[in-house]
Image 1 (cartoon, helix red, strand yellow):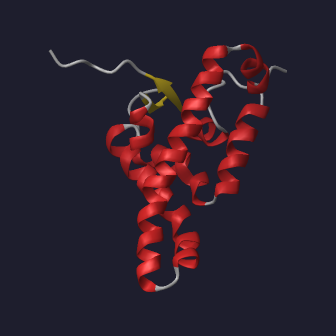
Image 2 (tube, one colour; image 1 turned 180 degrees about the vertical axis):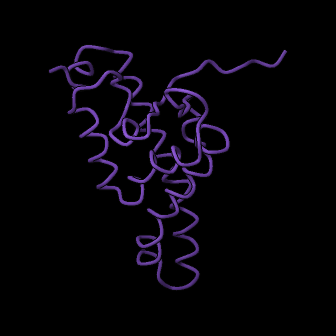
Length: 144
């Protein structure tokens, strides 16, 4: 049985892909977390407010951006896009692939399980496999 970890240990491009995904989710997390922290500070409960809402807000942010454009701001910054395996991205696929973002531990497990199972596409986290999606790198178009 070949796992995503087997591919990851030998493939420099795949290592770069996952590093880009990791930094992209950190950027997206900051985009969601900082305004919530500021709002929580204004109402007098910065950490309780942020901790409670940040996962749901990250899920909603990711779902909306990926449904509309195929990528969040973090993914777009690193020239990445969530795509369906076949056809066009449906809202249900975007929702399903982002469910694990509600809680950071779920996202970590999603990545680990996705890499631990026998896979045809080592770029997929587990929820990508379930939703029949993947994240790809693309070349940005240049204006002339």
